Length: 480
Image 1 (cartoon, rainbow, N blue to C red):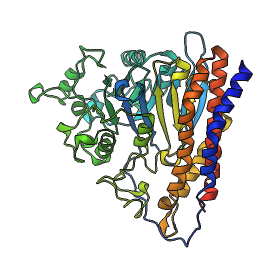
Image 2: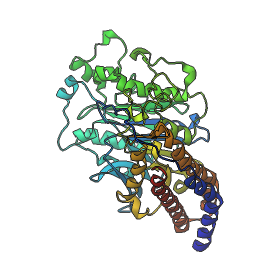
Image 3: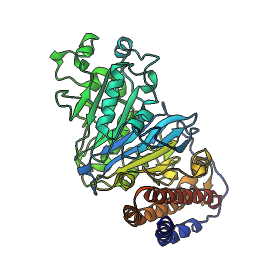
């Protein structure tokens, strides 16, 4: 059975390999004399973005989550499979960055977690509810993925953390957990305070670097969870007056300048504009009119989420690049979702109608998403290729990003404009081939059981990771 499954896997890959090879071989350019490029703008901060889509907001009924980690262009990501230490816990595919910083991932039961975004609370809140040194920090995501089967259980675990040791400064921020049925936003508001909101099944949610959960009803735990004294605590530190109107978590706990800073609100507007342009939201989006959840204009696909994570405001009033003629999109002063400091991106696809080992897929781009390919890592796999467990794969994708944004011109154009069609074509063919093969691969996997299924999916993910790595290695030579 194992030998047969490997043969079928290879047949699926061969059916879709030719287009990728053609894309790699095409598009060699003749370099011209170099000229100065527009200097890259310095961002005030280097942080992150994530988005979520409920199962009724997607084209195939999957729950979708997308994430860009934005710590530093010199950061790097790698992947490991963490076995279950005992029968009561779960195996998971672990995302890490430089220094073994844990970033979330996906477990064998289709539970996914993303590291989240840095968000600031007001000084009055942080002074009154400081982060204890022995509180839970970044290790919380390994705990969630190893101990929980569902997003609801993950929120239960976060609640237990708040009630026992609380959260350290390493846990400050807004996060997401999702499974094949639902997605939750979790915001740590202090050492002991937190809030969570379930994304409605028909809705889309976007999170830049500001608190986003607003009006809540803790009497409806299927929709909202959090510290029971959220409102009273805000009153006690002078951050909320009931006479002013309904209790708003973000306004009460957040730094209000950050809640209205274009550095954040532009990215929020950009993500919403991508999925619901019919709302005609103004870029300024006054706080009081800003939606938390939106119903997309059309059912979203995994590719739509990847498009958001790659978005540079192309075709909008915020686009400063003049169709890349004036500058690289990463040199804009209006900081976009995909930026020079983005060090990896992931899209999670979670599907309730499939066995868990097949239904949960983490599509990982190991460097800046506009210059990387999204590679499928199934939640049930048992290992990953060696180059993905170190900085090696990242280096290959980062070299493509560096070449795109290097100074100089080719054919009278800045390098990003000249070479981005080549990069998009090569990676686009790879991703299209993955999409074309997905149904075949998953049907074959569904016909297997136990270890044979895991081996089949492990081999497939490894084949795709190696193929994408080799593709990245080949591109710089075509970008002289």
